[in-house]
Length: 105
Image (cartoon, rainbow, N blue to C red; front, side, top):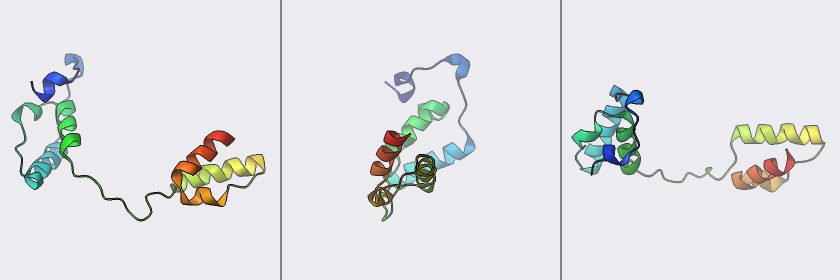
């Protein structure tokens, strides 16, 4: 069974792969020391699935747990509207910030 067989496909929406996608997949294959299967090289969805399965994991950065600037701006906008303060601990944890936003919308 190939990657293409495992994906639900609709022939009307078959999209060819992009050059950038092929180059990225070839880079991953070379880096990992694996072959890029020929059957995934002609279908964008199949190649995307192959890339997701083989791409290297991203190391956690020092600030990955912090909320994004968009989260902070949105929370501050909500706080101004509701005349409340965003709890200080929310600025150090994006999950807490997300929960605060959800509970104060």
